[in-house]
Length: 338
Image 1 (tube, rainbow, N blue to C red):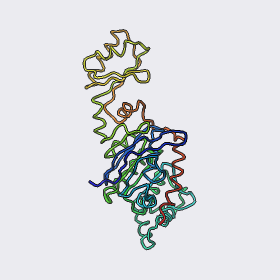
Image 2: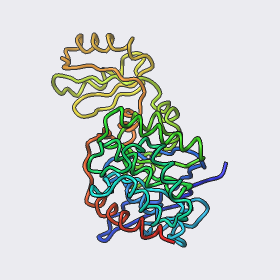
Image 3: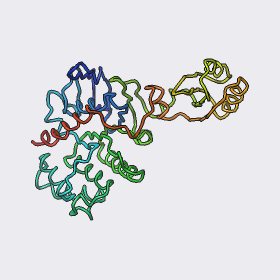
Image 4: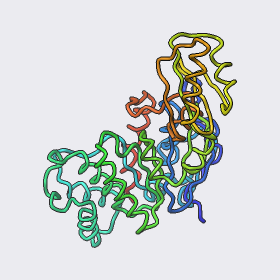
């Protein structure tokens, strides 16, 4: 398969010596949905901004749709689509006006604009609301409109930055249905950052997890979950005791014991069979427990295993995120003009 995105040794150091991205390398195949996950401050926003020609790297190179991003930034902005986390729509314009304006800024030929705009509005189920002001739109309608704006110029690669943040499950599912249809019909390559791990699990072909500026895992959702090697039982003792970890580790069937947030994560092959044995063992040794829970392999567990942190959906933006995304918004349409 042809590679739609190639990143080689991408690095970015900000003023003051803060190394936001530290030698990131990966490839994304044409037509693939590629998820980019990481906690706040891990380097997601900086990496995406470099790939979309919104920020120059300190080192490394990037090729998107066969074009050197840093040698030809204007070409890149013409070839890619962007949907930002924060709404970029104007409340005092209609849906149709938004898409027509984007078409003009991206240099879509006038003879094609009307049919293309009508087709996109129909596809996004916005035709009936096309001539209403956007301030009357629901959250899901706004996201579909912004998706139409992002693809009006027929990009080969679409970058989605937290595209469904704040939508209800039905709205999120609907948004991804449109994206999947675009992939199927046009072979669109999708690069997405998201805080919804269930979304990444079901919608992405492969995932990269970045932490402290470096990629710590790369693979399909199933491959990443298989790395855990089994179920995870979390045991929470009533009080700390230095003997607990060794006691848990001594139970037959336990693969690994790790202290985590006042409790212990116990890796094992068959969690449902091990839970009563662990409880009985702790009771026999005099360790009171406040809770025991069992989790099957999931992306949440993968993320916790690799970064030591839970992946929280309500993380706020960092100051770096805000600065980079503001630059992205300013540069997107400016670079899209021919």
